Length: 316
Image 1 (cartoon, helix red, strand yellow):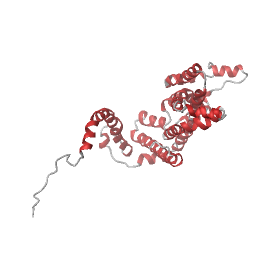
Image 2: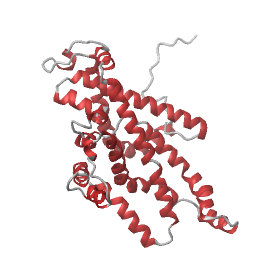
Image 3: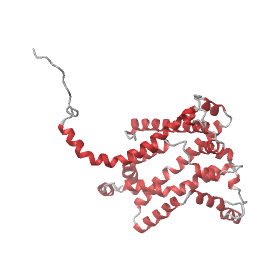
Image 4: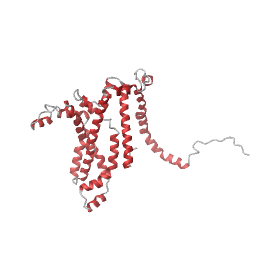
């Protein structure tokens, strides 16, 4: 009887030769993807360790690991505060208002430009609607303040010229959300339409020709060809936008805020900035920010699941 005195496994002997060849051929691609992978690890994933500040009483001297663990203390403080419901509702209402106003308009603009026969008009309109995207937030808010000034703003001058009374837009809580949304749509509509224009450029010409032969009108062609063709793009972007439902822009809101419109303009992002940066309450502000991120993640997963079941289109 043969006695097995032991066996040794040569490293890599269990790997099939064809797999080895594929790995060797893919080495340049692995090297190519290495820098962005390192970037993600260092600047995206490693900083996530700081999230534990939300569960500690952070002390600068002790650092993250030297600060005492307090569990859900800061979350309980936020939800038991008198301002929590107001801040969450302000954020939710402003986000939904902006989403409902800003999401369909780029689609409408892209479809209209796609149907334009004049290339010069199409390029001119695209350039005019695309340019505001490059205006910085500080400049945009300065324009809003100057244009809506109660004494020198041209909007109030037009209202007075038409027989009306000057309106203090920045000092009236009823106008804040509309000002934010309208100016935001004006700034981003042209840029957002580029994605849909790119999708529409891939529609086969034969479909339009067949629809024209069948006597379909422009509206019928849009509804039967254009919209179904770009539907996956629309659904994907809608899912991504819904996933950031509570991540309303900080800079613009903070610059538009004043002591009068704060009751409707105070959102989670500005609240976190004031509590965390200005008042040095890092643990509490991190807890509020983490709650914001968890709600966004939940909304993203929920809408993605519903979309996958209904239209078989998802981002995950």
